[in-house]
Image (cartoon, rainbow, N blue to C red; front, side):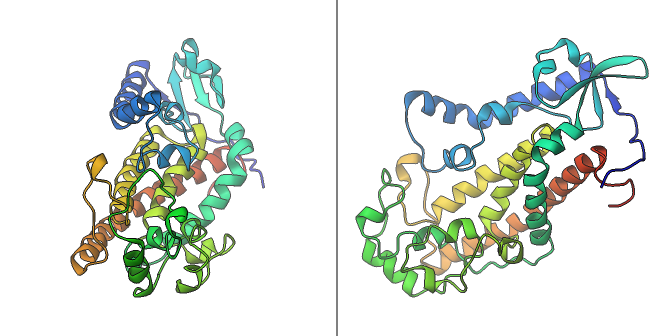
Amino acid sequence: MTSDVRPPDPVVLPEELWRRREERHHACVDHLTAEHLQRRRRGEPHPVVDFLFTYYRTSVATVRRWHPGPGVLLENAHRSERREWRHYLRATVAGRDGLVVDADSVWRRCGDRVSRARAVVAATAGRRGATGCFGLHEWAMLYRSGRDGVRHGQVPLRLTHDRIDEIVRGSRLQCTHFDAFRFFTDDAVPLNREPLTRDGQVHDEQPACLHAGMDVYAHTAALEAGAPGELLLDALRAAFDAREVDMRSSPYDLSAWGLTPIPVETAEGRAEFVAFQKQWIARTQVLRSRFLAAVDHVERLAGRVPVGAR
């Protein structure tokens, strides 16, 4: 559906101000990713951080690009390299020239994907967090696999295979995230509380899940120039923190990378993991709300939704 109502004129962001915001964004992303880029140049893999840029297929260069989101004119940006970027249009507002994000271009390229993501994120945001999984998905990916089944082959285990199998058998697997469940070993699949499917994500995801929260980073990046840079940066920071906890709670020995385990095979370790999950729920619910608002904003400015319909 398209709207006959003309969207409001963009807000003008003076050049000095948007340049300052862009520089701050660059500095923050550079701080987060400098070591990752150095390792990549040396050809050194990292079992924790690489995931955020390989599994999610999002480059540092993409994350480093700051966008204001639609509805904002960047004064004099037509004189910068931004004029060559996808999804930007030349515009004049109140006699001031610059560039604006073309919401229609963003929606035509990204709308189908982010609409699907929006459905899952909105459903997740509406549920209570379930904190009973204890991060055992990485354990389930090793269950009864032997050495040949180790997913992170360059990383030693901190427990024997027999002990890992014992922990999995003695726990009721509570995974709610399909993209973790799909990597379970065949023997671990029936141990989960229920089978998970891609189509069932909208019904199964819940906000205590570390990976469901990390996915908000990927969904935000998928919105391209439609996502405000501040949202993308906050989602990336959250993903960094969750990925570290994700792997610290695994059966892998990450001491060579300076990380101590969260021993979820013990009561103390499980309590530590649950404490993080409770903070994670609050943090990612805010990110979900901001992501949903960003998608709605792009859709509305693209004329796909009448003003006042959401």
